[in-house]
Length: 376
Image (cartoon, rainbow, N blue to C red; front, side, top):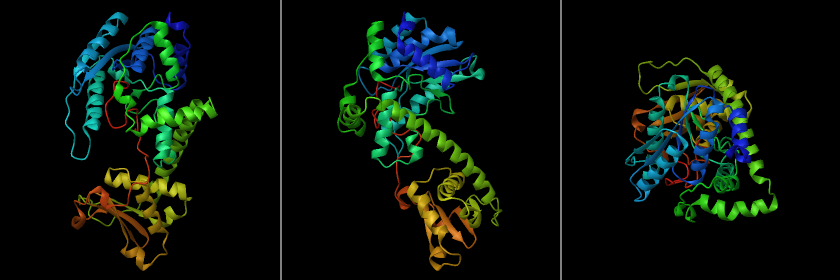
């Protein structure tokens, strides 16, 4: 029985301690046919009655690989054997001008999974989309982000439960546990040879860096997982304080509120009285609130330097930080103004300061710039 395996106990504990599921939830289990998602589907099928949740398995073919259709059929057979309803989806995508085909596939994949979850009669009580990231994936993400210059926010890495309903039941399970479980249950899984492509940072971290670090400390996966948890908790606290500071610093704008280019205006004195980490976090909140896009670390630092200049400083009056899309941050004596300037509209994102690190919320998952079988 699968319940005798340690991995099942780990998943049960993860669901409980991380608050992934509540009784009455419906879970769409994204299964690509890879080791992690096959294990996740099998374990959740076993735990569903105990947890009081219902399941629906889904597998997606983007039409990018000839073998994908066969893999979807294999997932359907597994779901049938487990007594789990199944749907195979064909989601074709085209890249946006600013993105890759792989990024477009990921957006299309999640969109289809969310749509499927919302169609369930019990969706109002809670619909979740389960994906199969493991503790190894978390460690690789943290290390890859460190190598790319991430700050504390970026070290939060893979989130156990996202606000949109995505959950990661295997996030406290190691890849070795997954392989042992597959053998124990005599389950087969497909292997993606592209995961061995050394042209990708994630592959080099997984095959070169992480094994050497584990030789120094076999408990490293747990340490990096704990670091990620602490980084997310710290970021959540800072964000709450930053939102409060941004609200206190906000000032009525003299601009016409019907002006589509109007952004935000904040008092420099209120921002300047705060400690630097909190002040910069508040600047991030203000810029994102005005522009709808998260500023880079370099952009936030440039705005902070501009605000630190003495009032009346000639350079501060002339200085501007371009934020992309025509948005500009300027200092007007006692206030910071973020607005879209008609004569700057259309500037590309690279017109502003260079990005300062990989602080995106999703970031470098396994197979960072291509779709893989592992995670759906």
